[in-house]
Image 1 (cartoon, one colour):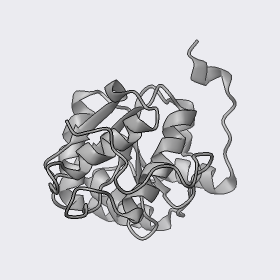
Image 2 (image 1 turned 90 degrees about the horizontal axis):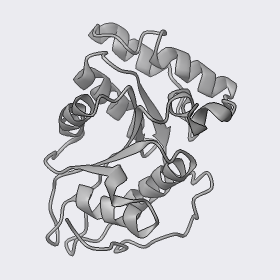
Image 3 (image 1 turned 60 degrees about the vertical axis):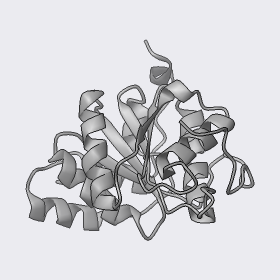
Image 4 (image 1 turned 45 degrees about the horizontal axis):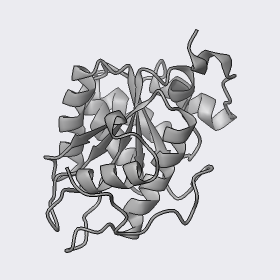
Length: 207
């Protein structure tokens, strides 16, 4: 029995509702109208989605990028997303992580900068895949869907800002065409990750 099976699932009413919607509630479907309706019904939350609690081995944590500064350092909005992802990554060590974003600044892409921030904060580099080609949220979803399929992921948790998560979830659901469930976590709530950890330039290097 894996380590995740020994921990009880903690689900608030909101988490349970979102968990049902992301699977049997209509969000995991190839029907565009139903997918959009279902996504609109979900409630934004920083809480851990049920799929990550139930199956951290098959679920991927996907952190969405944001434009870097000219020197390649990261803006506060991106650091906030990484702090939320770091909290999830520390709580669920079996879960793989995907950083996304292909716009280069200062000799590195968003995905590369994000990866090395996580590495600098204790996450093994081998846990992190990078999606280095996207230039929009739609492309984030499209290119990451290929990584998810290649890795036989059973689900994905999209981490982004509160104003961005729902649109991103819909883009990802469209890209996987209902093949796996997609959940979302809003950043701005560290859930155990140090609120002041890192800085805009916190990186161990570039790959």
